Amino acid sequence: MPESCDAMIFIFFISLFFALAVFLLIIVLGLLLKNALSLNLVHRMRRHNVKPLIKKEEGFESLIARFYAFIKRISKPLVERNLAHSLENNLNRAGIPLYGGEYIVVNIIATIAVSILSGVITLNPLYTLLLSALVPSALWSIVLILKKRRLESFTEQLGDCLITISNALRAGYSFQQTIEVIANEMEPPIGEEFSHMNHDVVMGVPLEEAMENANQRIGSSDFELVVTAVLIQREVGGNLAQVLDNISYTIMERIRLRREIMAITAQGRLSAIVLVLLPFAAGAAMFFVNHDNFVQLFDEPMGQMAMAGAVVFEVLGYIIIRRIVDIEV
Image (cartoon, rainbow, N blue to C red; front, side, top):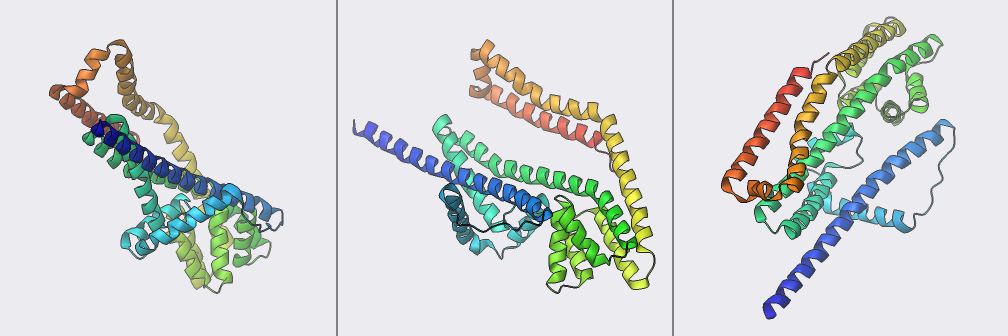
């Protein structure tokens, strides 16, 4: 009887700790969503010359703000670490409103939550360890996906941005004025980056340094070409509007060629997706149709070796197909 009571107490505290970890994770996700929505709202209000009103946060928003402040306090010892600085660079390029230390804290919270959940469900230390190790990889994969999508969106907007700048220069605007026009008129992400650049110039940072900082922050080879052209023109002179027109034409042609390649390689990319999803679909069907034999893949040593080999070959096949269809432009 005492042993059963101890087990119940242990399960109670584990469940309580897991509930707390899940609650903290939900707060973090809500914070990210709130920040993204507020950026979009502020951008729309700025386009219509409406100044956002600052009001006191109440209810759930106040809870999110307090929890974010709590994360900032926890992450202070990690701010000066080299790992935090490298993470901040990638988080900025992905458009995620977190510092490097805060991202590390979110990783720790998510890992703890998943480890407790998997431990309570599976009661297997090996599975718990494996699932916990997958959490940082999954979160980092999300960062890389968002970073790639944001860079693609920036590149697609860059051609129209350069046309707008060249037309504004022909109309008599200075280059600094064209930066302000782009910041106010164009949608994110290019509007956000030019707004950041314009803010740096207003605060006294030289235009050349502000553009170099934006180039490092964005990480786009196309924008690097624009920055190089502008810096050379400011040194030796020349028709900047004509140069930007030529760069815009080159960027648009590269985008068109990239889309043609995506259409041609669509079948190969779909094959890679099917290659990854088909074993899981077949395993789910076997689980319901022939449950006894399917369980042996996890209980028997030979079954575990077969599953490990299948995972390795799945990953290799996916990587090989992706390398074949991934054509640089």
